[in-house]
Image 1 (cartoon, rainbow over the protein chains, first blue to last red):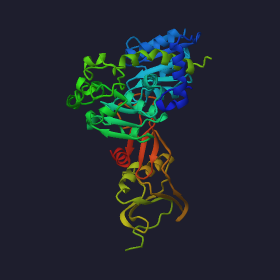
Image 2 (image 1 turned 60 degrees about the horizontal axis):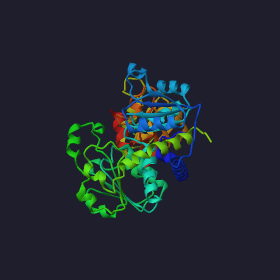
Image 3 (image 1 turned 135 degrees about the vertical axis):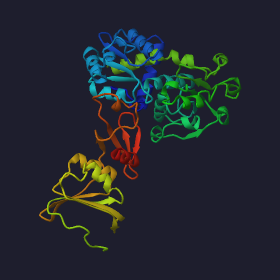
Image 4 (image 1 turned 90 degrees about the vertical axis):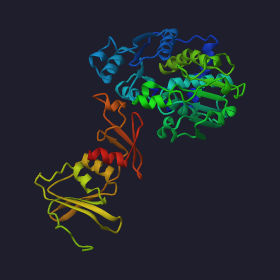
Length: 297
Length: 155
């Protein structure tokens, strides 16, 4: 395993071996990558991703360098991405990059000989979030195959959705329902290569009782070039008690977080709400990933 | 005149034949030919063709075609053939195919693509489909179609 730019860079075996290693970590297994230096290069704000990668690296005994905003770095002076990556490549054994531009991680991987991990590039991909998402499903159901998924919200600009849809190609979901307003439907570039049945619709009530996994995304104001377009769709969906009462008791609700208003806070105490549990799995799965990428055995 | 020559034969130069009808002006644009370069240029549009029903032809005296120009021509005129003429004889006939990768020639239409935002990131498109032409940005995966390519080249 080397650069992780897209969820497609992970095979089914990669997913499963990372899940198994994470299981072992949660049971107390000690793994280390001492003497390694990890760059956490976040050109865009982040809470969970930056902190969970940093925590994962610290728990592995690695040294962490980097930045969580471009203020105070040479980027603020106009340094381009390629030069920043060249510098980090000299200092560290692997670079975790978050950037606002689509394709930035792939470009960085062409500059750097050290492994690049994409921690979110614009509206393109966020493959390590998919590791967390699918690990949560795996831990809940013991499998990912044969489950019915519903992915709801902003399917056009949400990078977590692109990576999740691609990650699911490594498994055999029964069907994946894509639920969004027409203007936020999933990009055909992403849908083209999926190898499982999908169905696009607008109303979650049509299929809510069939779902095993309901995955919700925030409608992201920052991805809209036109604020008027955002205003039209910003509150298209709200997960409330009425909707959750129609779900199967054993089904789960996931969200990559942060949430704003798309999930009623009353839902947090329902058995289906798994989004905070999902967030809690970020550290062990990212430990497993860093351990695999840095090649320590 | 159904099958006859509309313009005289070239002595030395390039004939671009089998251009889809109506695309000859775009081909001239790719070649940067405005008419004041001094080359003799013949442009024939919407003539009958056995293969294509209607086609355009461009003949340029004393001018060769670079690899970059040939790649751009394939994108806007995928059926085109390029004939190199010397002493009134066709010495080379090139039927070009759309390349698998198109690097540094086109701009990604996604303003948030890294290729539009880093001085070192050059555009790179991968051929997804030949007919209809669809190219995919190798960085952000945005699709561009033949109409987008034509619009970009003509703008």
